[in-house]
Image 1 (spheres, rainbow, N blue to C red):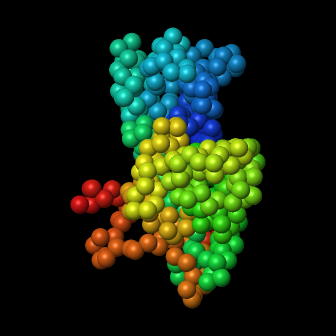
Image 2 (image 1 turned 30 degrees about the vertical axis):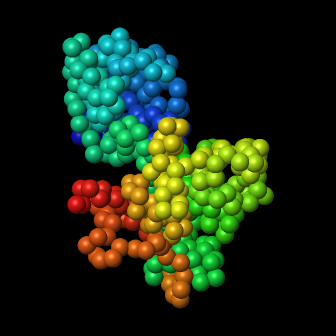
Image 3 (image 1 turned 90 degrees about the vertical axis):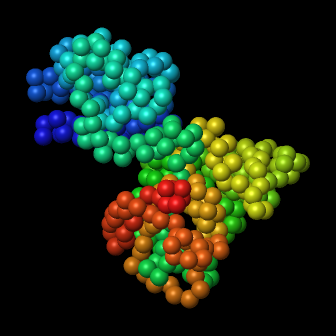
Length: 369
């Protein structure tokens, strides 16, 4: 029980890096000696010290000696040179006696080598402590490091009769303040936020993170034919918040009007007359955008599901009924029969005031087949 409590503290520390370490993983570390916690650390920002080295720095600040201590770390210590030197070196040099590891690191540069190096230096390693919880906080990193593609979360808010807007198009607000606050936290968690040009034309959103001390996601607009108004909030603030306009229109005088205002215009392959979302994900992955919160309308949501880019769905449901011909969260042609539905699994329900959120993993179509 004591070991689990120390790892849970490491998990809480790891979460403090949310939104600031990507495309690196969230990692927390706790050092314990003679039953006392003598050091704590987490990966605070991309390029800065890793969790283990921050924990050692905390020990030194407290005047504590780490030799013979235990370390609890949520992810296998790295053993390669990147922006920081290997954490395995630091663990060895500080005389740590035993290391408890939560998750194995799927990064090919690590992938079991970190544990192997520690053991070769006589350090006892206990693996898979609270593995499920430790894996959970790094779903994005695990997906990105193994595929090179962004982890896409499709998010929408709807009424109990499945509407995302009234027949007039009015949608503010469907859910209450607690649910909307959680959406802001998701905007912080994800590196990018993506909508279609229809959303820009209808709502003129800013798509920023409104949490105090937060970080704005990279805004990605799917705009096949460059219809985003030059005086929209998105374009007007592109000099302050990174903005990508994905389009089928090759570099023209028209696209230069967007670049002059600070937007990055990204030419994407065409598929069925629209943007090829798989090609877009490939290009965004190459730009180190490891995750995207998809806040599009029904048309883009269907295209995203159909193209197979969605990893997770978050459906916020409010205890309201609009009735009539309001918009659906997923439009498109739909599936022709029930057994061809997009299947979801590992669903969990979270309550936010009077609203609920159902979060589910999208089952890969190949595994369904």
